[in-house]
Image 1 (tube, rainbow, N blue to C red):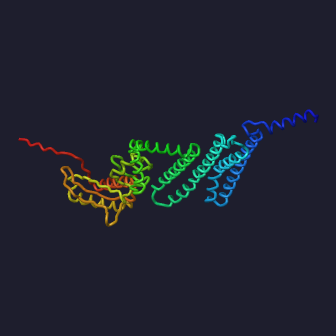
Image 2 (cartoon, rainbow, N blue to C red):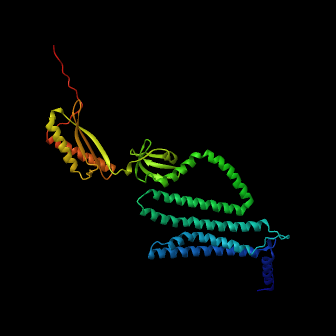
Length: 377
């Protein structure tokens, strides 16, 4: 290497060490900052991959556990936390003091950014840990007979995540804007919140209605209910409304405040489904035909296993009325379990068997009719 080349190289080194971009900060300092950021990003990715790999292998060997869930949830937030740590380390290589010893806006802003990223990492970690709580709440809800708590789990998950997001936002805003400005903003929000609350009183009423539903449990998911003019199974219970699928297939959304102030008829909790019917036979059947018709219906009902035969609710069959045009036989029975479509199947079997047995016994069904007698002079 020639002397001139060596001189130029030394001069270049002096430029590298002495040239300042911002007063007091040479180029090499920013080079170290860039290097630290790159190292922290690579280190964060390596740790994230290693934790996820370990958690996956542990889960394959031992199944799902608290440890594997925690590791999976914290792998990505850990990457953000390492990046925030790298920003704090970068501050050590830079000078942000002016001649009077007061920290410059750039230095203060750097610290605020690093704290904000750290707060994001912490909030992200708590946000992901909600999945662990949700997992064990789902396991607990699966062990209970009621299905309403299955709907409560996602509501709790959303509430926790919204709370974490609000707290993290307030902390970051306080870090950037300062406590004084945050108090002013919150005070303004409080005054505006009163106006919003007055305007959104129905929404607030619906929220407290949902709390009442979860606490009182007037119905469960998939139970058949009648609320006002709406009849159908409950599909979903939310913070604002409850969704009912009518028997016609329509999805009806009922505000929770309406449900708490209305009479809720829970048809799904009935122990039986009752059927009452009037079977009419002709007057030509006579006393023998009426008596035999009652016996046939009793025999048919006794042979259907889904019809309740408990002493408290046995099948009832009576020849109870002389109609204008027919002899009336009253029939009543209870079907269990209280499945609506099973109830319809039992009714069909009973009806077909009655028709078959009546035809065999020559007992005729009556239909509304009139007989006119014309007197001739």
